[in-house]
Length: 402
Picture (cartoon, rainbow, N blue to C red):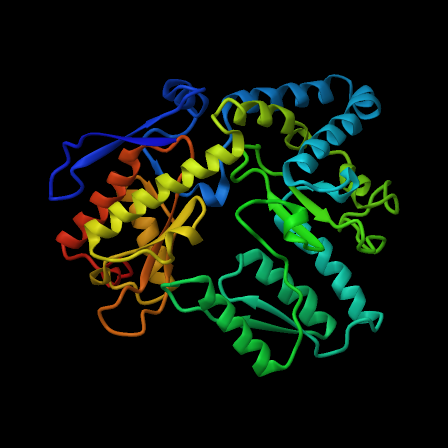
């Protein structure tokens, strides 16, 4: 998704060049057609929360749904398991797992997390872990994962320790230093799931790894995979919903948890066809999304006189963008009120977060902007202009809460 300069007619002293998006294998018109079901009045900068699904994939999903509804027994005995195995095989190749049995398809990352934590909870009860043993996680870990860790580990007798992290982050060393400080302080041992920009199970070396497929891989909601390394004793891993396939291995258990809609799990081959229309496939999309979101983030912080939350190389397809301190974001409630105001009065959908700046006049609010193939440069200009108007009008979050 390369940027090319052309004249920018926007005023107010912002960037003088306006990027133009272009692709080699799929045209801008075709991309916009694939996502024409999106609300055209909204600047959708929150792909990281709910993802997106192109029309061609939605059409394929509907065909799977109709095939199931047309003759359920025939679908169950002749199509479902074959289709899910096909999807698992594609995911196995995509993430470089050694064997297809290491890949299970579940609803979302929250379900995958529950599968692993359920095993950990049993380990406490069986004496494999001791009462008071600790799980260490970042304060900024994904919200549902944090809740799941608290629910399973605390009730089993373990402790949950959060590692604080001050924004902005300047390097990976900031994160490592905070983890070391907590580990030295608590004198506990932590086993963490690794994550690198390139999703390669052999390179990462994790026992477990999960990722949603409906956020950045264009699947319809909701579908995710969980990887369990073959050398790990996976006998104790079970899907939280117990059904007829219980005891046949996590992958098989997850492929049938009762009569329901499995179409989101079955369209993975169609999704691969879609992403391969882009130069470089999914890796090319990810690389271009990164370049674009960094450029848009830099445009915004230049307009507002703030800074990004992390260096460029620590961002993927999302960046944290510092908001003007004059907005007065003093807590999470202020952040949510601002987000709601932007949605309802400016047609901008973007998550806002409170991060204690430490000093008066420092950046205390950040917007997490995403970039996906359907986004246009004007989406980010719309966001920029909305914030500029709020600042110009002297509006603060204290006013929004009144």
